[in-house]
Image (cartoon, rainbow, N blue to C red):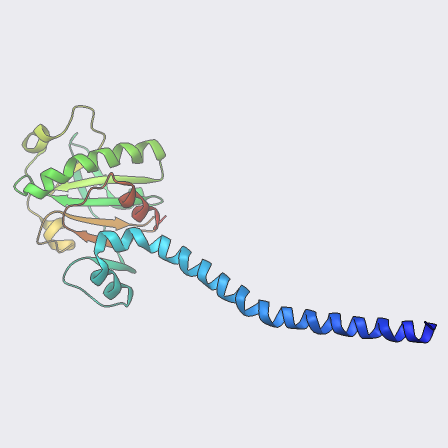
Length: 214
């Protein structure tokens, strides 16, 4: 074969390889896009799963669309009203002094059976929070004082309990009508989530929901 023919064959082969490469690229690009999109959608669903489970599908979908619902709240447009209450040791506790950490704020009362049933999970969550150091748990009681509620707490409880017997905070500033009610406030003092009703706050699902607002 003459040098001229060999050169022509090489050019033809390179041309075929270029066409084949373009075909592979044209076919592969949409597949890569679809794969990347599927991975992103999967990660999004993984992140929203804890909140969806805690709020329920209907409430989660409505709140995600920016709609208001009769129960629960999800958003980032409300600042938590500041307050100072007395804790179980008789010391003042002020909300704004605890900026920099996510706060789990629970409103409850001894006359609310679901509140009492939920409380052990909050005690456990408080112990987890203390060990981790990146969030805090506070239970605000509508009861009179520590002796009124002490019997339901274990001796080694690290849960911070505050008292609002006249409900100026609970019903006034925060508008709570039914117990229990739990608020998640981010490190900047913004209300991110309100959960109406009792939950198992020590469950991995609940902790994952709290971690979303770190």
